[in-house]
Length: 487
Ligand SMILES: NC(=O)C1=CN([C@@H]2O[C@H](COP(=O)(O)OP(=O)(O)OC[C@H]3O[C@@H](n4cnc5c(N)ncnc54)[C@H](O)[C@@H]3O)[C@@H](O)[C@H]2O)C=CC1
Ligand SMILES: N/C(=C\C=C\C(=O)O)C(=O)O
Image (tube, rainbow, N blue to C red; front, side, top):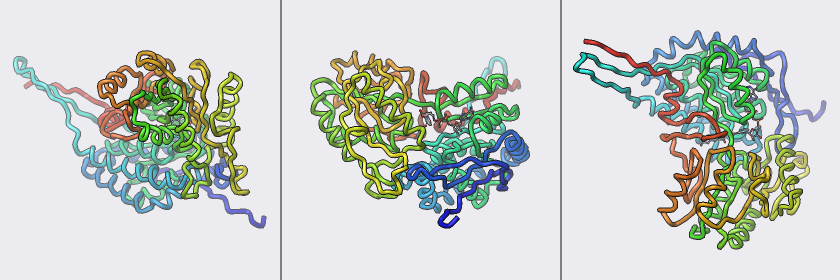
């Protein structure tokens, strides 16, 4: 038809070759609501082909020296860096995030992921003990597990996919990755760059499709001894059930209901802009985003006034708008899910200080069908509300007062999640004391999202199992063995 744009057709990448699929899934541009891409709707057949390719490549790749694998990973980082703009444009169009965020966060961090593990792989040491009285020496060795199954989400597509691929292949595994069917384009673009970077065929295989179909085929495959997953708790439960008969190694990085705790001695000049960003960055679609803000009563009114003013300046716009702080949410269904939480809050008697249903969102005509909403601040809401207990994963945050340190720690911990938290105070003793008592795997104090890749990343309680980082990822993607030598 006249004016019909050609759809972007993705293909699976198996054994270093692009292969078509016999059925496809529509993939949407979140800023327009239009189908612009077709993603392979793969299944067991494609997973079996990927397993055969990964199995064939494993001996060669795992026997390479760390130095050689490091060299290849640096080359992957180089080609990603050279394609930064193209990748950023694609990520923004596919996920709905602003182009500015893709340029400054998503793609640079994808590059860093490869560089980081290319370096760290050269510095791991093993352990050794002596039993001289028995004439024994004991030492450990760590070897790659084999074929790593990697399942990544739609919120930080290339950023989180490479956070799994890089360590997995750095230690000598081969991988089968399944990105989210909603954001598959940059993974497909990565495949095109792997050959250029000298990654041997079969080392990285990317199979596209839905979770229940191809995701479960990957999770259930007996030759895939390990699954690294980031996404929702419900899916993690399913993956755990399916992998249990095979006793697979699992890393589950799940969601959060992250508190910000703001004491009366906080530096509000720093706290407010950072807490706006921690609440609404990437449309609030980051597992580390703040969605509960506890403010000490003596400064509650001042904080709320200034926080609402600052939130109203957090501009929603089309992703290519250089002035936009926030783009479109990932899907129509997700937008409705987030909006329903706001309706539930209103039904419980809460107040909407700004955003959805209060302020007006103006968009160009071609973006009216896009999945946009305003950053929304809810107050006068009870701790028992679903908006204070459940992961909304959108640009919605609740602001509530508290009196004492003991009270706020109890309330902040009173959720099933335990991923991240921020604490704001100029009293360093209080910072250490509160941070230690919070049930969170990550606590940022007087800041947010300053990432130290060398240290463990992950959550407790329903926020997941396992950690990722230099030693944690190395230990996860390898099997450790203790060898005793009697002399
Ligand atoms: N990073 C995080 O913490 C994320 C949390 N979420 C939460 O999950 C909610 C639902 O988002 P979804 O995209 O549906 O997340 P999801 O957990 O269903 O999807 C994440 C990945 O898992 C795959 N998957 C889904 N079902 C599967 C199955 N049965 N077996 C194997 N793989 C499967 C998906 O295809 C995707 O690649 C969000 O609203 C948010 O609350 C979603 C994405 C990221
Ligand atoms: N796992 C997620 C974010 C990780 C961020 C990082 O490693 O810096 C998520 O949003 O699901």
